[in-house]
Length: 240
View 1 (tube, rainbow, N blue to C red):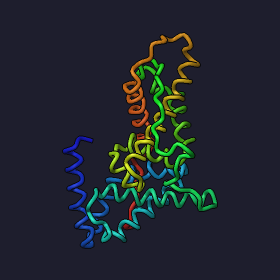
View 2 (spheres, rainbow, N blue to C red):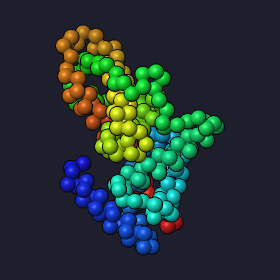
View 3 (cartoon, helix red, strand yellow):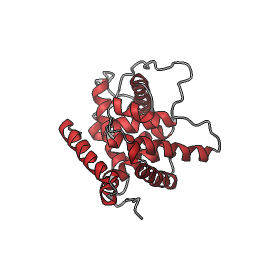
């Protein structure tokens, strides 16, 4: 999002928040309409269950409405709202797994926050292939197989466009930890894509395309697919 547009949205959010704090339910409904689809996408990333994610979003919005007085305005309202949604979604995930050991603060087994080594891309023009359903399915499965923390970092940063700082606030992680996890996800996606291309084009040019450019394009196109995955008719309300 353009920086000026982002600042405008944040300012407009605060106007609606101030009105909501004074008891204007209609103002909060405007905030709900602005973010409900986005929150559902994020919740589905954590729970991987449509019904649980819808419940989590409803609960998060109600909790946000009931606790508006706790919003200190030292961060964007959207960041605060996303954090509540992630926490509610994590509670749903804990119930799915019937134990309390699921955490978005889990560490890597032994490598801590070290950035993984880079892997070259051996890929053709992404615009020629990224919209193929088979490739989208591969990317989707790769993301779904990741641990909750990695899936969530990827969606917040690369799909929803939060900054590293905002993502760190939402997940209560350091910025270094967010960067490390984001690298891990991108590495997994890149490795899966490389295998896909190697299997289908074994005689492709041995000269790899620039890693960052190709990966960025593919992830960008994949993110558009995910953003379009939630029906535009989806809506929720705290005033029902």
